[in-house]
Amino acid sequence: MVFANFCLRPALSDLSPQLRLPLVEAVFGRFFNWVAGAVIVILLTGGFLLMKFGGAQATWPLHAMAGLGVVMMLIYGHIRFALFPRIRRAVQAQNWPDGARAVNAVRLLVMVNLVLGVVTIGAAVLSRGF
Image: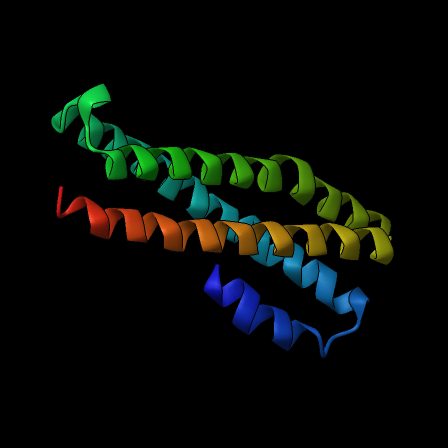
């Protein structure tokens, strides 16, 4: 997420929409497959942690991590299954304004997920004391 927002996006701003949007589509198409794998691993390990440390009786930081993780996964799902297809359709139709709007919506949601990820790491750090 840091790479996409703070490295890739500024570099892409030098390109015209006709070059930028197909590149973004190709990058996201590959990246989202890796994210899907990470989501599966996070669900499995998070579920294991909750079961290991008491399920519903687990400490609040574990519940916070689980809840934030679910919110982040829902955001990813919206990006992957609602916004990314819009980007694909816009690239295929060469509708650069619609594609740019969808990419901007992805950018904003990725920033939200980045903040939630940092908060989740904070919850993980706090869980060590409980």
